[in-house]
Amino acid sequence: MKTRILMAGSSPGSASGNAVSSEVLVGALQEVGDVTRLEHRMAPLPSWRARDDAAIELGTQPFVIHGEALAAGFVQKRRLSEWTCGWAVNSRYAGALMMSGLPYAIWEATLTADELESSTIGESRMNGRGTGLGFALHSALLPIGEGIEGLLYRKAAVLCAMSEYTRSRMTDRHSLRSDRVLLLPHPPSRAFLDALNRARLRIPGRERPSNEGLRLLCVGRVDDPRKAVADLLAAVARAKSEHMSIELTVAGPYSERWKTRFSALIAASGARLLGRIDIDNLARQYVSHDALVLPSRQEGFGIVVTEAFHAGLPVIATRCGGPEATIRSSGGGILTERAPAAMVSSFQTIANNDDLRRELSARAASYASDELAPAAFNSRVRELTERIVEDASIRKPG
Image (cartoon, rainbow, N blue to C red; front, side):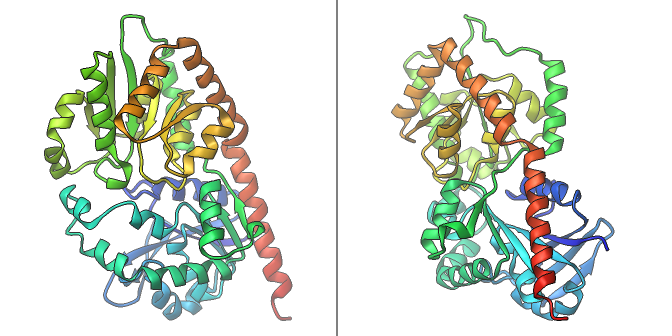
């Protein structure tokens, strides 16, 4: 009988930060069995809605992160138990799986506490990311949410972290054995790699002419305070004030309030804001720049680092958690502090040494091919899923 798998997470292709992770995991699980996506929809009461696109929407209550789907999972236990097993992209989506009694795996990006503590209510409001009420509620109820987070970890059949940083945070914060949490690095999506191949045909080379400035790229949710794009704008503005020839392109969604708030920095840095772009345009940006910059305060992994490495693009990243081990292990980038002076120094290192930039690029591409390939990820997901199913079969009465 074919394995039936529930994949709980964001909708692939949506604006959510977990959307790419959901897309990657669905692709891997489709090589193992029949996959149904399980998504959350905020609702006053637990509910169930089957869609035509192989997805189920659970009506969930948005009060406590990690606790939002517990009631829906309990109410819909009989329906959910018809599947063989489940996977959750981030533990906040695992509640319904736990309540249904299905054996499940969690693929964790970052702990809720780390994400909440790297921003403030005021910043979220000033950047146009809502009223801040949801942030305030989740922060106030964090102790309850963390308790549920720990329970979800302990009940999981398999626990995976996207990075060494996240694995360490999971074991330390929830007193888990180190061997309880496996490392499962994040590859790029197949759609991105296909777009990258098309972009390379269109833009075959990236060698920087001697009369052109350093071309930097930043990719992410621009108005998210955790991404600290304003710090990057300040660094580029400082570099320009010191007569450095430098260009910055920023790809990712932003609110008009964010743009207005930082209009002076945008002007001083000369940054080109692309907003949210399609995947082909995104791939073209990767292959037409000299380095990717990740200025974040906190990252659980940093999918953009994986994408940049596959494009052969060196990465300049702040010491923000997730990307650090990848950059150290690969030798494909530079780690820096978030202060403008430190970032400018890293820009100059790349700009003034073409041999170093080429070496970093080669290391990045080699590491991507060896350690961040979709085939290796898919094989590991298959192995873990088969282990979950086999263990559940052994424990099943009769």
